[in-house]
Length: 338
Image (cartoon, rainbow, N blue to C red):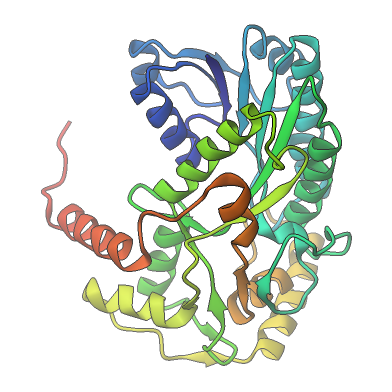
């Protein structure tokens, strides 16, 4: 079966593409950045962004399943920019699916679509989608998720997955950002340091996406039209995990603390300055970041286990050990010469 992966050169998208190729699937990738290595392996590549409605529609021709992983990600920026990519881009993709009779759409959402400013402890899919969040990313992803699930029909079956904090070897965002800030002395423990957080290893996230596609193909599956949280199912104390990682890499742990109230106040000030100036970079602190670093964010996997047959294969301990070994090898490797 022919498959389209939007954002197929990103961390999650690339891993989905690799798994599809290993299974002998015919793959099309739509992404902004070229990937000549994938093209050499027979991948049909469409270089386009999500605001190119014509290219998105055309990319759906001859496709049976779409994995929509592409998005504008970030905690800060102009709402219109996020809306154009995350909402209008998804609408264009849905239109392309209908025009070209795509049968299945697996949409990569985010747990932050249920953000409400408080702790999320054992949260399940009954929580309402957010309409009031200080970051444009969750707001626009929530709109897109709602429209994807509302588009579910017998002709186009849709499902939304909400993977939380995807990590592993090759992660370009989460761990590198933590290490960069820690080494620069710019990382502070926010809150009590006892907040529990769910993460998901990249291989488990890919498993969930492929299981979701298989569920959409079954006539008796309850998955079409539903959203599912996807995690490792092992809530960790966030700051313990960060400090254990730093120690394993020979880095000093984070000991300096800042209260959630102070961090939130700093976030308000930073947001005001970044709007006033305006600056193109992300603020060092926002209200959304403060809440994410200090509050519980862990989720009930019962629905994904029941409806998708999802079981995390790579544990937090095994994935962390693998990541540490990889980072140590990378640090010890001689610099590349041209």
